Amino acid sequence: MANDLHLATLKARRRLFIARMSVQLTDCCNAAGLDVEATAGALLDALVAAQGRATIRASRSDRIARPCFAAFGDELVPTLRATLGDDLPIAFLARCVDAYWRHVDHVIRHAD
Image (cartoon, rainbow, N blue to C red; front, top):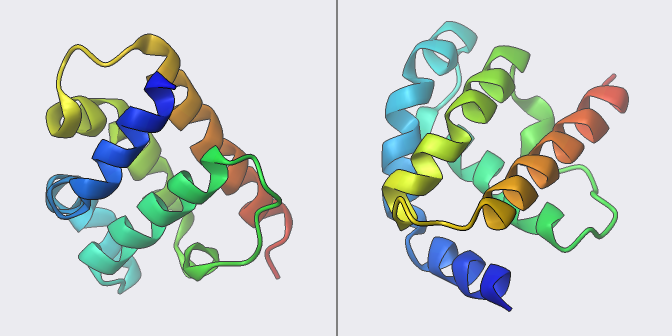
């Protein structure tokens, strides 16, 4: 239940999360010729979709450079805490990290 509440809050604070994560993705997105906010949004969408543990289909994130996947993953927990508060349960953070990296693994394994 708490996971659902935190996930709903994350969805409600989407713009704030994307703005904060975009700062962290600027270098890798610029180097790859990607739009920073679109990349942050696509990866956030993938993280949210993967929370349901449904089969992950191709998404906008399949065109993202691998360094951006790594940068997003590195900054995920600090950005979640900055967006949702420092008192987030470790179980929610762990589910987010797990869902995100499951998605990345799927995308990389099914890349051209």
